[in-house]
Amino acid sequence: MDKGGMISGCACCRMNRRRFLAAGCGAACAGAAGLLANASPLFAAASGEKMRIRIVYSLHAPVQPGPDWPNKGFDFRPVMDRVSAGLAKQCPQFEFVSSMAAGAEQAKKILDDDKSAGIDGYIVEQLNCWNQVVQTIATSGKPVLYVDFQYGGSGGFLVYTAGFLRNRTANVGFVASSRFEDLVEAVKCFDVVGKGGSVSDFVAATARVRTAGTPKAGDMACKPDSFKPLSTQDTLQRLKESKILAVRDQNSGPADSLVSIPMEWVSFAEVNEAWKAADKDASRAVANLWRRNAAAVIDISQETLDTSAAMYLGMKAVLKKHGANAITINCLGGFYGGHIHAYPCLGFHELNNEGLVGACECDTRSTATMLMENAITQGRPGYISDPVIDTAKRQIIYAHCVASNRVFGPKGPTNPFAIMTHSEDRQGASVRSILPLGYMTTTLEIDQGRKQILFHQGKAVTNDPDDRACRTKLAVEPVGDIEKLFTMWDQWGWHRVTCYGDLKEPVFALADAMGYKVVEEA
Image 1 (tube, rainbow, N blue to C red):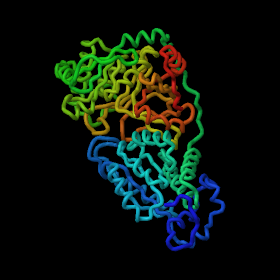
Image 2: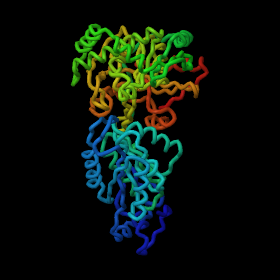
Image 3: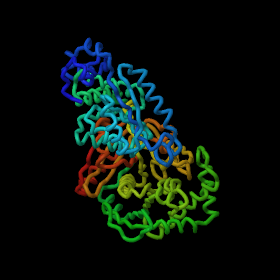
Image 4: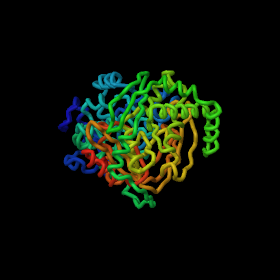
């Protein structure tokens, strides 16, 4: 398709005529390109043709076959039907066709078939996290609108969108909103190209409708939350005195230190043996304590609670044996591979309540970040998460199946929590913690290789009960520019670690002492 857009009345110029449709793009798209004021609506109407837009749903399968966001067994067919029918109804100026693709090979076939299909633009909806479809579709050079299905495709969406922004990909606009109307307004921006504008004009128009649909910052005043941060020197000393056990596979042995924190590899087998050796009566006592303290226990058997408690006691035994105060386990790989036989989620929850560190997915960088937050605050737990951004509410949502319910430290008050299955596979036992609202939170990631600390803050505003994706979902309103929050994920990955309290001053001081730079991502 010739992006220059010469007007022609010849019968062979069907693609060019489509660009000059009379249909409106919405107020935010008006004037996106200087050519629009001079476009000829009479010519477009006479052509009788609509822009043809293909919706590409990026997912594993119509019904999800395995564990991933949103969850095993999730039926995407009603989701796809609602999107396709909703856009057809609310954007009648376009003709929509749809396809599904699981990866680059299928995406390339779509592009090859579309060479003769008269497709003028693409909508790619990321329904599962990591399917690499949008990258191939973007090579078409045609306008592409990239859409997040929240709590389904959000991880890949954030990482891939940040890559498009970093590489200044000229033809990809994006939508990250829970409000269907925001998607509709962004889709209307295809008319910018239909009226003769360039694909970069289309992208600029989608940015305008996105920011226009994002609420202004609300009341950012927070509840009082006084704590005495540990001094910088004492924090550094505390980190040197800490130790991380990293359970990645069946290998064990010494590991390089991380941010001055000693680290050691521990095998699945050692953790599994400690789980098997846990006292049955002690395990039952812990399980019963969890049952009594939980606001609800949903679809969890006593046997699952008992095995989860045994895993907690086993992890404590391994920590004691190695003189460590932090453990991170490749939980999914271990469980699905048959190397461990209970999820550590409830055990991590209890360790974090006690002032120790239990961290998911053998993410050693986030484990070091949790230790840093714990040291600075003298015991407050970090909350590792997979974030989601929702511009409709001006929120970033921190989602994971593990969270403390003592966010102000081991001696602080508790908040309600429910015990539920691990969300992605509906197995085992995990935690939905209903975290306190109205407080300032600080979110970090520390990176030894870069000598940087990634930083943003936000006011805790709600707990999202959505059944999709991970169980705990704390939503905060970020301090600063939510648009800037889209830019770092390709460089830093998905995980972030959140702690209650305003840690800005001690974090900056610690960075100075370590020779690190603080990167403010909002």
